[in-house]
Amino acid sequence: MRIDLATEPGSRERPNEDWVSASLPASGQGGTLVLLDGVTPPSGDAGCVHGVPWFTARLGGALTELSASRRDLPLPEVLAEAIRRTADAHRGTCDLSHVRTPQATVALARWGGPAEEVEYLVLSDSALLLESPDGTVTALLDDRLDRLPREALRTHASADALRNAEGGFFTAAADPAVSARAVSGTVPRAGVRALAALTDGASRWVDLFGEGDWRACVEVLRKEGARSLIDRVRALEAADAGQRPGAPRRFKLHDDASAVFAEL
Image 1 (cartoon, rainbow, N blue to C red):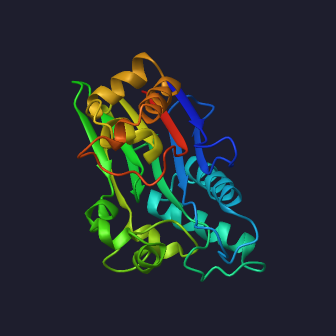
Image 2 (cartoon, rainbow, N blue to C red):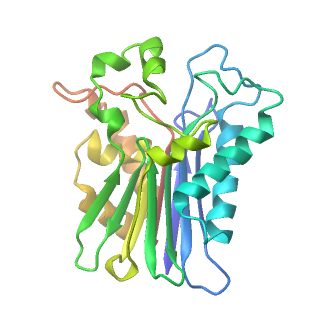
């Protein structure tokens, strides 16, 4: 088994709001991946005295511990409990009902155990990739944000109205019930040779710049590593390739970028 991961902030002047971790049991059988992309709020009051990096560290730590130690809980229940724990940690000091309370996208994977399955969960726009023994790559995506009209996200006010709301998109914030909105399920362990998780700052290589498909992305991760994928994205951003005529417009020149690859 081989696991490789990397993360880099979008700006040296701002803290990295991503979280990425991998855990392996002492037995060497099975493992877990946790990847979060903290949602950067616009300037102004978000009702919380802590900030997004504090939130992703708390939520990521809880997800890492629970996904490894509570194999009796399906991943949606793991996410619900992790959100509950994190909310309880700042309920007394912060307004958790604020629409911009700290929140994050989520990608989780867990494999091994008695059922010999790979469990997965994706909430919002991080990507989870499963590679089969024949090299086929399946992208597990929550595409609700992509399906919204771009005009609906043009201002912070209109985006806030769609956040964690029917007809909009969902993130992990303070409500454990959001876990039921995640894309989740299981596949047989024998059908997965490798898996990868990417925040949208790293998945730009595929879905913004179009440098390759998901299968090519997995090959970069396998042959060159997670650090190289992020370096490739940074080079494309520096060349401003994403702003060429007809290309999708990106909201940030550089975004926090994280990737993790596990070859089972």
